[in-house]
Amino acid sequence: MVQHVGIIGAGQMGNGIAHVFAVAGYDVLLSDINEEALNKAKAKIEINLQRQVSKGLITADVAAAAQSRITTTTGLDGFGEVDLAIEAATENEQVKIAIFKELCPKLKPEAILATNTSSISITRLASTTDRPEKFIGLHFMNPVPVMKLVELIRGIATSEETYHTAEIFIEKIGKLTANSEDFPAFIVNRLLLPMINEAIYTLYEGVGSVESIDKAMRLGANHPMGPLQLADFIGLDTCLSIMQVLYEGLADTKYRPCPLLVKYVEAGWIGRKVGRGFYDYRGDEPVPTR
Ligand SMILES: NC(=O)c1ccc[n+]([C@@H]2O[C@H](COP(=O)([O-])OP(=O)(O)OC[C@H]3O[C@@H](n4cnc5c(N)ncnc54)[C@H](O)[C@@H]3O)[C@@H](O)[C@H]2O)c1
Image (tube, rainbow, N blue to C red; front, side, top):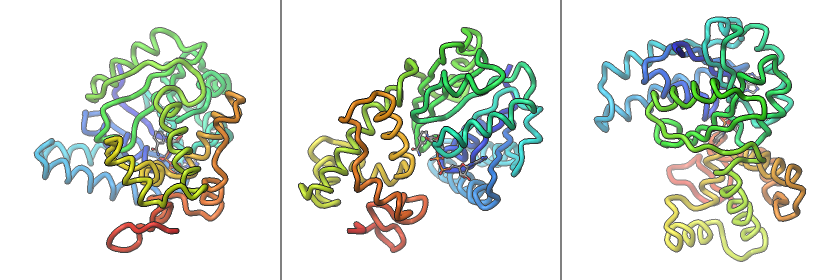
């Protein structure tokens, strides 16, 4: 029975995952190596809870109780208490492996270990832990409090019991699941990221401007957000990592990351989380950066 959830990484995804588990009544331990990220996460969770209250989705009491259930830490010491640990740190295989090495000896033997990776092999990550049969991919969507889906991905060694337990608690937090087999980027990002990468090629080749590409896809394909706006929202560093995993994992040049995406990441213009990506968010209204 999952009661206590630990989350490693308090960025865009970690704060959203903490939010939904706390609203559903779980005790949440949220960890990040960066104190500033934890402070930002707490502020973001408060804003998002208040937004849900003002929309009538939850009561003020539920929001206050949710906030009181979240504890933050810069270390991993409290993880001995958790029934489920979800790794939601930077999309980099070495970063994730280093976290698992430090985390596993602290976890209860029966604790389930999940990763929110967008693209990296669950089987390969599981093999670096002491519990491949209790390891699973739980791919939440951004923004977590709003998006209904969680992709469930089994590694080759994931037990049926782990899969079943994960499925039940995802239902308990009010989300729906889709099963994906363990192939690079799973289902959602196997389809979404090549589209975003192609939008960046469209910009790179001068087919359209930032605004015209986004407008074309919003009005012409009924996408709620243009692909470049969506890339900024995901984080261009994460988009690049996912394209690299697709490119290397499937060994097909059709997944080659667009050089312009690489350039934006090298510039540190990695999207909304830093105030600048394909758009500059630092003024009153987002404006294209070039
Ligand atoms: N952004 C999206 O739309 C999205 C959607 C689904 C899944 N994901 C996945 O979720 C994960 C996190 O993405 P994000 O968008 O929240 O990234 P982010 O850059 O907003 O946050 C990552 C956080 O991880 C922290 N971190 C880095 N190394 C750490 C360590 N060793 N220990 C603890 N914390 C550490 C960083 O300080 C940062 O706060 C990635 O695996 C990403 O692929 C992202």
